[in-house]
Amino acid sequence: MLTDAMRGIVLSGESADLDGELPGLLSRIAGGSRTGLAPDAATARSYAVMRALCAVTDPPSVIVRDVHRLCAVHDWAAVAEPTAGALMSVHYNLCVASIVGLSQRPEYTRDLLAELDDMRSVGLLMATEGTTGNDLTSIRTRARYDEATDSFVLTSPDAAAYKVMSTLAYPGVAKIAVVIARLDPPAGAGGRDRGPLHAFLVRIATQDGPVPGVSVTPLSRGLAGDMDYARTGFHGVVVPRTHWLAGPRPDGADADPRRPDPGSLGRCWLTLDCLKLGRILLPSMALATARASLAITVRYSLRRMTRSAAWAAVPALSQRNHRAALMTCLSRVYAATALVHDAKDRWAAGIAEPERTLMVNSVKVHASYTALSVIDECRERAGARDGRGGVARRRVGVRGCRGVSQPRRTDPGRRRRRGAVRPGALRPGRGVAARRLVPGARASGPAVLERGARTPRTRPS
Image: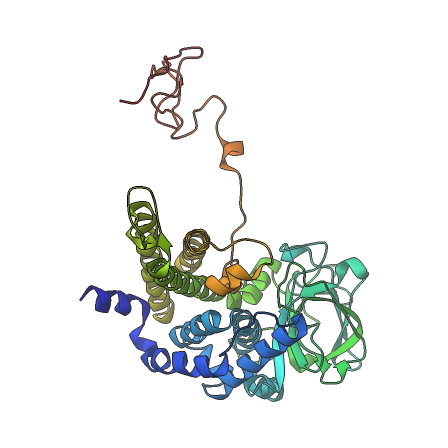
């Protein structure tokens, strides 16, 4: 009964058909070891897995409308082929979902969306620039509206404003991108921008290489694994007005680039709204890899024999400290999985703002940190090592999504009130200050101590 209950937490009823078909399908598509593959060969394999998986499931433009099916496809892909799972998250969530949500009229983007649905082209979203990082409000790529041709012209002002994104450097693959740029103010607008974030649907490359006006410079794969990152510049790329992803209007009319928006803040949120789903999708993928890491580590611990002076050879899992660590990880990862499934249900039910934003932000932080810590614990318990060695990839081969959606780390000690005691610092037998509260002091930990008060060290009984 416990096994059935835990399986029910992981396998959502809304995607039961995919959860039943995808494991066997992916074992045939992505079977075999990646060990020893050259970077280009590993990337080619990831693209092949992504295309094969897309060919036997619903089109991406259909799957992105169902959060349960979207997460099911990505979870299994992340476990079977981590790099393919990362590429799919860019194609499905960042590109296709943005087109579906921001297209002014379906007929404007139907042709390019059809290429993305059957994988004739791979999609991506280009927002990050080399000097701005994740501060999207400071991007410098410009889009100028040309009224004579009824089109936009994209330009990178200098090399520091080139876009940095994955799924770009591998040759022989057609690419279509949702490009985030700053729209120049129209004549007579008093220098106002129409908001710092505007999305444009742009063909970046064909199978023969980048289109005219687009420069692509591959980056080193030393830190990116099998992901083909590149720097991309725009030099007078013409974009039809129908490929301006301004979002559907309530009155059904097209957006007018000659009339300023009432405010830039609403424009930013409109463009970013389609990215909120990724704050559920990516933690879901990370938890899938954490559950797979646990399964690998537990099975390995049953075969890994340990010996000491007091006992004969026994499996590592029979050791209390080893078993307790893995059981703690098990409870944490299943609790986080239940949290993510609840978020999926609420998203599918149409939770309203601002509760939706608060929900996805909190789920992202908790689930991501849980997955990261569980995967690291499994790697240690399985004897895997860091770096580029093959042990970690062979024993716990699901590290590809361990860093997805990782929130920014901060040092809480730097923000602690002056004079406060770090929580947990008062431990007996450590010679710490006595537990005498200073009158009128604020306590952020177990106690605030009088300066200079000491207790003698004691031996543990």
